[in-house]
Image 1 (tube, rainbow over the protein chains, first blue to last red):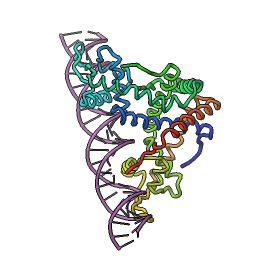
Image 2 (image 1 turned 90 degrees about the vertical axis):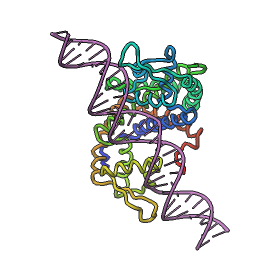
Image 3 (image 1 turned 120 degrees about the vertical axis):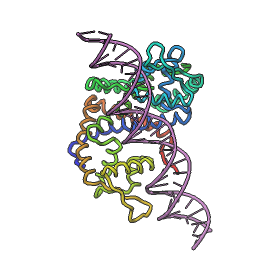
Image 4 (image 1 turned 180 degrees about the vertical axis):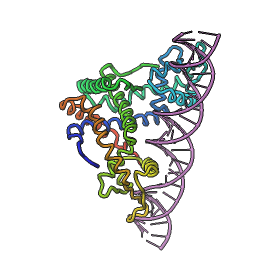
Length: 160
Length: 160
DNA sequence: GTAGTTTGGATGACACATCAACCAAATCGT
DNA sequence: ACGATTTGGTTGATGTGTCATCCAAACTAC
């Protein structure tokens, strides 16, 4: 390919490090799923629900909390409902809305998964760095994220 | 959910920063795809091919270069071939192998996409950090990646 | 040689995410 | 009141990635 302008070595080191770390994160998610039976997506939904009063939320609130596209939520809730982790009922105060509720099985699943999740995060990431390094890393990610946000105001993404 | 042991604030800041940055990266890939017509996966394959002699490589070499599962490569090459970006021919020296070649269209696609790719990386990531910060960031990712590699020697995906 | 294993690859089923299009209830403007 | 628009959600098509399984060619043995 035409290698007109590429990154210099310093830039490339940082960028590739980031990419590899991000790649690893997908693997991390799959391992967690293999251990707990919950994907990262499942986890995000269950955490939100489990923090809500009575373990129930309107779909739209859920969507705001985890910042998903609506079709993604619809389809994922379908799969989770068919697995018995959540239920979907019509919303009383808005006939176009949906109430999503944690089932007992869902609550048990998230409570079983949470410690393993934390353990994984610690073992794979936190333990690699000293407290100072953690701060530095957090600072740098913040710089980049702020830079992104400043550039592109349509950017937010989140989970976990 | 039971909040038995969670991360302290410092740990959480670093972890969440990482997650958000990794999430952003997916969005980055989609934007690039919208602009160039090439997904990150397409890009990885085309870059490898374009760097090879004659723009051709055996599938297995390609797989090693980008570290993919074999079924992923098979399926992605199918899609790319149907889009006219690559061709697949039997390998002369090993009857079970496959030779993958860049087509003219594929070469043009990667050459058109590369500058935009670099521009995006710069604009979204590199430009956010000073040279010193780039080094620091690269160092920290390396620490984490080394830690991961040291812990888990079974990380590679492939089995049969 | 010829049986057993490894290796390069293909295939089918499924999970996951996006996009575009659609629908009905809610809301808004007048 | 009533048409127009927004909003909450669904649906279907498509792209992408994983896993498990299968297959034939290639390398062992012996």
